[in-house]
Image 1 (cartoon, rainbow, N blue to C red):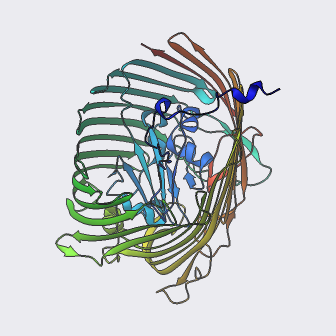
Image 2: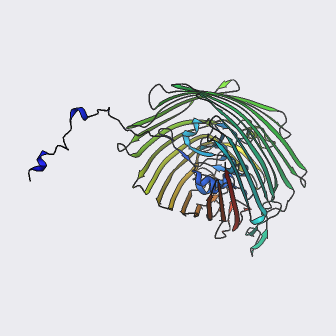
Length: 627
């Protein structure tokens, strides 16, 4: 019984002890949003599902951005928080690609398969890219992966209404040099059936004509990397040929439009211990030729833009960034629509400071000054404050205020018979309060939630209003108030071979003119045209082993089509279903899926008198070879 008392196995002897220094384990938080401001990133799964479509279709189903579409193959433009397409900034790797003539981009001409990332900036956050995005900004990125080896990807598909698309990607390189080549092709007859419900009763089914479209494009990227320097060169060419279908009130089938663009960008990033430098030069060219044989109307427009941009970022303290950005943009427009060649030079100086929300508080402060044709505008600013509600938890309260301005486009000023050279610059004060939560409930379940309240007070907002079905004119609205909320909830669950995700989003937007310069203006207090008050999206995705399926539902509320809110388009609900099979093989991967769009064959219009297609099918096969 007393024998164990003599055992000394649990005693430690000084000469057997090895003393080591303590190891402190801390988490390194990687932030994707500026403190106090709202920014979201489209996930890679969504980009893969929409790889054979364009940016407008993806944003319509996966964001709170309203897309005004003239139908398949037609122009598609975004609307942020009660503003128009010209108040939305579209950038490519931080360079503004909006047309200086229109002040906007046609999102139907941007294939998802050519881009690697899509970042969405709301309100004042858009000023991190440039001025002018009063509603928000969309930044599309092309970037390297720095993986050694070769990747060949073929993505082909075909579907209803004579649609065919093909995408090829070739990536070659290692950790020091990368070459990426992408090519895209689309052909679509768009000869779908629609219900004519505007030309009397009874309603009749008709077939859409003169709606065919073809697109081609390629993107070449070259990246060089060493220990403290990354240089890149990119060339993006795009062309499209569109037959413009008539409205449901017209029989004119003679309109046609050719679009071409060439974008060349060079960039050099230099990294130092506590600072980095970025130099970017870009040349953008866009050509648009329009013809209407019946009206004997032909127009030819060419614009060229030269952009020079320099940025310095320093990190004097941990989690604190200072940025100084200087950019100069010179554009020339040559068109037979104007009575002369016009040009514009815009220089912008931006300084910002960001303190990441590591502990309790985070803050972003930005100041911007614009020099337009040798004249300084009133400075713009954006300030965001972020507060962590619970220590070491991802529960945040955010508040921001910003002032952003936008200058009229060339068409606003010089378009024949309707341009207005007396237009004033827009400017807006934006206020935003939001709550965000990111919680890992267990090793299997993660959830995210966000609620944002916003208010835009826009002075001298420029809006084109219809005089009749074919003629629109621009004008300043003395003051427009846009108020609303955005809410989002998402969940992700994964166990063994089963994964699932759920997303639900809702937005409420009230955008009305408060004061008008025109006596008796019946638009005061009325919702702006083509701004839905209610909008909602939801998506659910399941995957088990090699099988996956997803269902996306989007609801768009009624949209008024006249300034007095007496005419409107009814709400519509669109459901899109994807069923797929992904087979990972040795050094290869095959992804085969079926897309059913407008699952329940809903008859609707996004723009008055421009019908949208009913149920359609699209089969896609993605083949990837790794070596």
